[in-house]
Length: 286
Image 1 (spheres, helix red, strand yellow):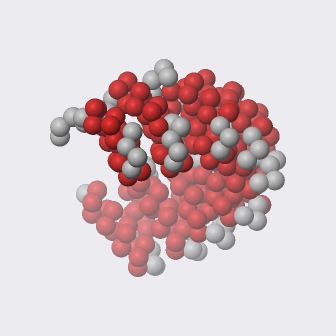
Image 2 (image 1 turned 180 degrees about the vertical axis):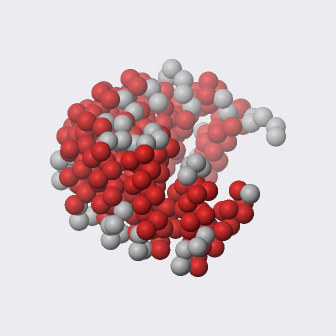
Image 3 (image 1 turned 90 degrees about the vertical axis):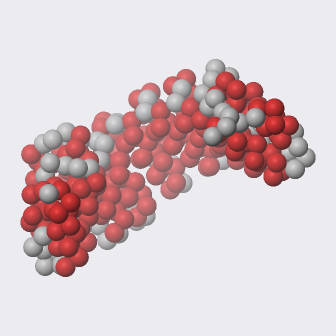
């Protein structure tokens, strides 16, 4: 593949055609950060919000010394809430821990829920424990999406000390909140976690059950423990064949040492689909 023509891309970025400018931004994916960022800057104030949004996202993927201050300036001062949200999201991709403070400020102070949501997600991406207190406070938000983002972020950070606060969401009426909780618990090992996942494995939502089963499997992968293994393998006795199937799929996906033994047992499962999946897994591992 030939190298992108930077001169041609620069010309396209100044074209009156929206299509040309979009194609130029797409072409910058193949350009090194130090060459791409000066060109991206040309359209940060474009008349098209779509162009601006793409350019901001590109800054998060092309880290240079210029990117951090540019994104913080947009997060803190742009009048368009969508652009501020894009900047918050890009700071999470950038991976610069200096972004923790401006993101916390946005989570506390921005007037638009989308910006606060993006800030919470990015704080999770940065995995910096300095964000714990702000995220725990965000759990009290009246907006469900903010609660979801805060739960997920605390899981990403591994904030085990926040378990008392996030476990209260196990009784949420919103299955998406319960799903985010189940996913987060897979990174928060503790006896409380096991009890909560045991409960969530019996949830009325299939998505929540799937997340809970995978989280149990992930806990076992991260920290081999007889209690976790017993909790996970107990699911082989679930009356719900889909739960037994999810158990097998989770152990296969994470390549756990327990998989062959589990597959042998499930090869005799009364549900033909579970039995077939287990038999195929055994054949592939032979």
